[in-house]
Image (tube, rainbow, N blue to C red; front, side, top):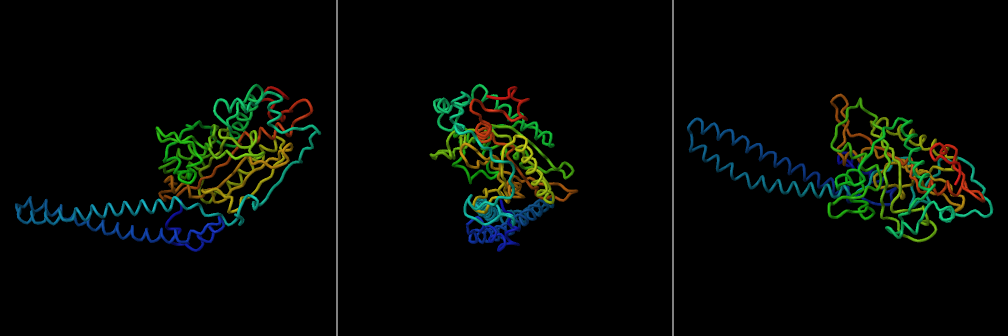
Amino acid sequence: MLLISDINNNLDKINSSLLKRNIDVKDKLLEILDADKLRRSTQSELDGILAESNKLAKEIGNLFKSGEAEKATKLKEKASSLKPKSKLLFEKLSEINEKLNSILLDIPNVPNDLVPSGASEEDNLEVFKHGEIPVLHKNAIPHWELASKFDIIDFDLGNKITGAGFPVYKNKGAKLQRALINYFIDKNIEAGYKEIQVPILINEDSGTGTGQLPDKEGQMYHVTGDNLYLAPTAEVPLTNIFRNSIIKSSDLPICLTSYTPCFRREAGSYGSHVRGLNRLHQFDKVEIVRIEKAENSYNALEEMIDHVKSILKELELPFRILRLCGGDLGFTSCLTYDFEVYSAAQEKWLEVSSVSNFETFQSNRLKLRIDDNGNKKLAHTLNGSSLALPRIVACILENFQTESSIKIPKVLVNYTGFEEI
């Protein structure tokens, strides 16, 4: 959530930066400033009445003590006349704050200066590329056919149990899933991240705190009876650990990692781009989250990018990194880098990770502050996939296939217990 003080001081710059997202929010920004001006004047008027009420209460008490009941009674009448005024002002202030909050929640984060202009993913900027595109044998097939051939993932069975987008992993396919999760967690721990297990059901405050609500409400599974949501990513429960918290500067950085299943309703279109593991309603992901001081957050972002790079290199997968343009940038992000792995059988790039800096956008919603020797200021939050499993599995199956088997990347053999499927 944007800071009103920043809007007031940098209105034109913020509006200009948000134009990179192909939206014009100038009217909303002005509406925020008008509402804030009214809020402050209303609060001032209310404070004045409350101060006068407190003053009268003391005078009334003193008059009763001194036996001047008649004067005390007259002042009580005056004090009583202030109550309806204060009540009306309380109600007015509540309405103003609700309106102000509603508008602020609807405005996305301000893109970093590095974010390129653009309307869609086609305008994202490639900033890094690694590895050779594998040349497959002439009878190579995509991962959904490999999954059936070797009986390791059953999409029809998942459809029977739940519906499309909920695959069942079997035999060595299930072991490969577990191996990747353990490998990712171990790599993250080696890099200084603390492992933590979190709930996969979140409440409304948690969704609002990290920016999924109200922006992505339609993309989340909602447990209506309890007004809970299935977490779309471990980022949400991990970051909300620190909601309404003040963290000592000496305790930073905070680096956490967690494995969770993730749930998203957004899948549902048709075509090869969503076949098999390419897009799912439920998928496994290992996440990394950092809480940082403002002055270190972009160094932290580079460290996270280098960390994900090192994992993909060990998996021997060709990948590239894209800096997202304004039109493809997530609602909460200032700057995001997507990692894409090349799928040799499908002959296209598949996104497997996003690494983002949100600066103070989430911490302002969360009321997450740093205590730096008595000086309270908002923290910077960052997160990244390290990594999402479905498309990693898809690319391993496709890129490492031979005529008769699927080889396992060397780094995973100690985790799987086998060298091929």
